[in-house]
Structures are given as C-alpha cells and as structure tokens.
Image (cartoon, rainbow, N blue to C red; front, side, top):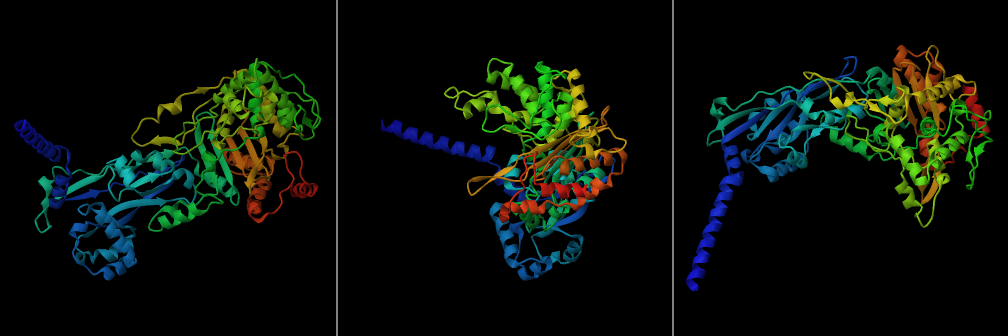
Length: 640
C-alpha cells in the first residue's frame, strides 16, 4: 500500500511538472514576448486616416500632423525631470503619473506619455531627445476640421483604453480610434492599416540593424476616403437656425433615404475634441447636464410626435376600411368620450372630412376615426395590435437600421403594455383609454429621425429606403445592400393621395395651420404639431411650454426633400418648427431663401429664457395647442 502511495505521489508530481512546462512553452507566451521586446524594437508607422466629404465633394475633415512623446519604462535612464517637464510644458506630477502608469501596465512596452504635441513642440523637443534615453517621439495624424459644425454626425477620435484593446488586438496602447458618428461607424474603413518596422537591439539596448533584414516589416495602408450624403450648406444653415434653441432637424431625400441634414441642438465645434485640450473640453461638454450638447436629440430624443401623427391615423383608418374621404365628423371644440374632460380642439369650420381634418388639424375627427379603427375588432387588444403592426411597417417602435452608432427605438404601445398598465383582466380597458394615441400623444414616442422617415414614406406613397449617411467609399463599388432594399408599408398606395392632399392644404387653405408659411413657387405638404411637455419638480408633475413639431416634404409630386423639425418648448408647430422647415426646404430646392421674414424671425428669436424657467421658478404660458394668453397672441400677430 505504501509503495502504491509513493508511486502515485511521484507520478502526480511528474504530471504536474509536465503540465506546467507544457503550459509555459505552448500557451503562455508572455516570457517569449518579453524576451522579444528586450531584443527587438517595434516601431509603428501610422497611416493617414481617410478624409470625409459631403455629397457635393466639399471637404469636411482632413488630417494634420501630430506627435506623441513615447517611452519604454525599462529603457529609461536617470534624467533631468524638471528639464523635460519644462520642455513639455507640463507639471512634474503629471509626468511621473504617466510614467508610473506605463510601468504598471507593462514596463517593456511603449506607452504614450504626452499625446498630440504640435509641430512647434516637436521641432523644439526633437533637438533635445538625445538627453532622455528611453524616450522617443512618434508621429501620427490628428483630425483637421474644415467646418465648425456637424459634430454630432462626424464624431471624434480618442486614445484607446484597455477594454478596447482587449476587444480588438489590432489596437495598441496609444492608438486612436473613432468614437461617435461616422468616425465610429466607419472606423475600419477610415483608419487604414498600420505599418510595422522591427529593429534588432544589442545587449546595451542599442539598435544595430533591421530585424531579419526587414523581411517582416510592412508598409502602412492609408484609410479610405468616404463621401457622406450630407449637404454641408444645408447642415450649416440648419445649425444657424437652431442657435439658442434645443431640439433637432433631420432632412432626407425620399427617393433614396439619403440623409441631407442632421442637426442636433445645441451642438459644438468638432475642433474642441482635437489635441491636448480634448479631454478638458470633453469633460466640460459632458458636465453640462442642462443643455446636454453631447446628447443627439435627433437620434436619441424620444418625444410625443403630436399632430403630424394624424397623417398615420388617417392612413390606417383608410386601410382598415372604417372611414372614407366623404365621412363627416362634427367638432364643437373637442371630442367627448366619457372621460374627465373632453379631448380639446381649437375652433374651425365644422363638420370636417378627412382632407379638411388634416388641414385644420381637428382632434375630434382623428379621435373618432381612431376609435373606429380599434373598435373594428372584437377586443381592444386585437385592435391595438393591428394598429401597431401598421405603424411598425413605417419603421416605428424599433431601431431604424441607419448607419450611425447611436439611437433609440421610440415607443408604439401594444396590448401587453396596456394590459399590464390597467391590471387586465381584473380591470378592463377600452378604446377610450388610449384615445390620446389618435393625435400623437399618450404613450406614443418617436425620435425626429423616425418622424422624417414616416414623412418620406408618405411622400413616396407607401415605401421608403432605410435612412443612411454613407454615399460612397473610395475603392468600393457600392454602399451596403440593405440601404438599397425598398421597404413597403402595409398601406395601399391609393390611400396616400387624399392624405397628401390634406397635407398640401395645411399650407393652401385659408384656415390651414401653416397657411402663413407658404413659399412662392414650391408646393409643400406639411403638418404642424404641438406636443405636450412636462417634468417632475420636487416630485410633482409640472406642465411646461409645449414643443413645436413640424413635418413636411416638397414638391408635392416627385418630392426631393422630406424634413422633420422638433423644437423643445417652442409653443406650437407653426411658430418655430414650421418656419424652420419652410426656409430649409426653400434653401435646398432653390439654393436661396426668399422668405426672409421667416428666416429673420427664427434667427432673432431665442428660447434660452424658456429653458431657464424650471430653474428660476417662472410661470409658463397657458398653452395646450388650442389656447394661449391673448396678450401673447397679440404680440405674435404684430410680429407676423
């Protein structure tokens, strides 16, 4: 028994040693890597990052030279710390902190000590580098912005962190990577491929020759240039119109799904996130929790769409066969359905049919046809699900599939949500419990991108292409195929004509809600919207000034542009949203703006005071889209 025990101990010990040796020699390459790094110096040759152009070949983003001070901690010899700090223009504590961080990470690997030095810094420092063994300068390129707008869709580049390196071993410490916007979305296209040179070192750590005569060296491959669908002039104009306002503008070419403008407000100069001040500037932008300049309201802001949604309510009712263009609905200032208070409406001629209902934005009409749509089915649950599926065919209630890395799904409520909310079947709910959906309020939420997409689908009479910002990649024959696949809605094409007629009359009827926004020579179809707005202050719901919403496309036939405008706290649809949409359309189609009255009004009116009210405790105007103080209206009419 003792012999067996002794034999098993010997065998176990032997197997343990063999396993450990196998692991060290086959799987664990850290010793080999460290040995190679002691004997071989690796130098990366960074390629030029691809340039970015707009749809008209205007250069938006190019490159500028930059230099990083690098160090291999184990190679550093005692040096004049204060002298180097003086050369670099940094504090001693900062230098020591970076060196200690590099030692902890891997003392035999190169690390960035001072990033993004200018050409002037490099010229001054380069003459002194022989005094600082273990340090060297590495050249790379940084972004050089030719424009001071468009930061939300361009994105920026930053140094990789350890989690990024673990995720993609292509990147090494000190490398740059695209973040946000097209810089992130098309990172692998724009970055190119690094070149690598290896040098043999002697025992004194001196470079003596190319490693293996340079046979393993590779040349850098420049990044590809990309052309965006963005119209730079339209984008710049949109950002000027949104100064001192919050919200967004997004414009599409309906026939292709190409994004013409993507304005998020407030925005910032993209050059702020370049160079040695990038980190400080980013921190300041990120710390602004009030204006939130880093929050892309066009792609991430989820809002009630308001009255533009009525176009969809009409289309679904027509498709479901519960209404015709001849059906009339009487409106006496609101829709009464047995709730605590009627669904309010403004005064207009009555009764109205579908086309008039859209032109006058009659809440009573759309509440009536929505109720008929849901009540067509045996249960409200079935009705809601049918309604929701129609909306999903317009790309609503889900991610849009566009080629930008950020976004939200919005919300199109389903039966399960209402069952949970009303504790069904303990308490039953009916169509009137969801009546606010009819006019784009209630639980319905959309991003401005989703709003413009359904507008483009209406302009096309029932189909659309997924919105996208890429137009061309140099050296590549075509853009991704998913942006060329036509998406068809569940609504038959014949039902779009009366709805489009109603949208056109929003501008053309004397009582149309955008009648004063007409642009000479352009047949615009649009819809005003006023979206309710509230926040919680000290645990209480406080109603704020409503949002201004507007959708439009033009021309009426063979449309060239579809647009959605959302201005937070903008009072009502035509006030800010309608004015902005009208001049943006004219700017794109004509190349100039003749409605200078609309343009000047927007440029000279700020909403900054409105945004301060929750902080200062100031009152808000009485405004539910249907009534507002007589004094305010008098001032508004005088300006018009």
